[in-house]
Length: 324
Image (cartoon, rainbow, N blue to C red; front, side, top):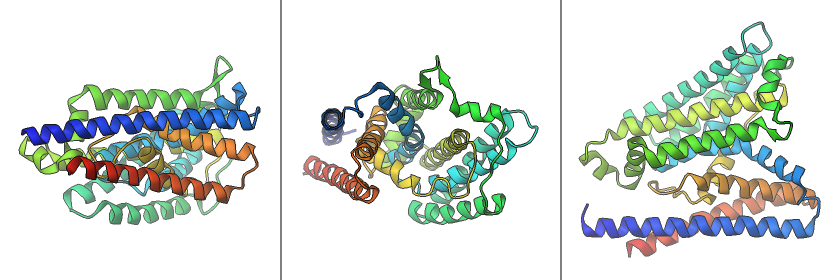
């Protein structure tokens, strides 16, 4: 890497750290303001509820971050949640061992991710086109499998996967979220695979020259996103004690929003793993706090969209300054 390349890389890293620190400060300010406006918000039980509400989007955002690191994105994750959740709920009705619906959801998500990744990486179809198409295909399959109806009557063991609490206090959903984020954080920061993901997103041509199999890396990122979407679908139906083909609609936008707000660049190659939690928490804290304050949901949508646009604008502006 030449001197200019090193300077640009260092500048991007400093810019990313500043953005992530700023988002953390913003999160703390939002928590402080909402705590003042509503004493109910600052209660311990509500904070636990916020983390519980963050879990599904946080897991989806973790997979989405892997794809975004390579310079892509996945619009099908919400549909994968719906299909994997319906299949898992159907299998959880029968006499199968509990690991069968769990593995089925994970397998469905992984296969969907493999499908997306193969078309994007080896057939050269833009990620937007592939995942927009697979979003429709997978959602349609969810309706076919379920017959267009919700699936009820899951067994107690399946319900307990996401419905229980550690020591009667910490929801299992929160534990799953932090385990997944920490594992992905370790992969991104301590393994060759993680460094190669950053390299592919940072400069694809340079990554090819250095011997990295760019196509395989991109495909693997989509597979991980699909796998985690399958996990999210299984956990969501376990929590709801039912599956629905409509489950997960719009979740892909929340996942992208969490990743972007957390400091990941849509152009790829930059972002820290802990930014995923920060971004997901900002969305959950805002949603929870505004609900408590009685703010209607459509105003929340306006605010969410504004925050995402602002986050992307700040990323584009910082990159222009770095390149100048």
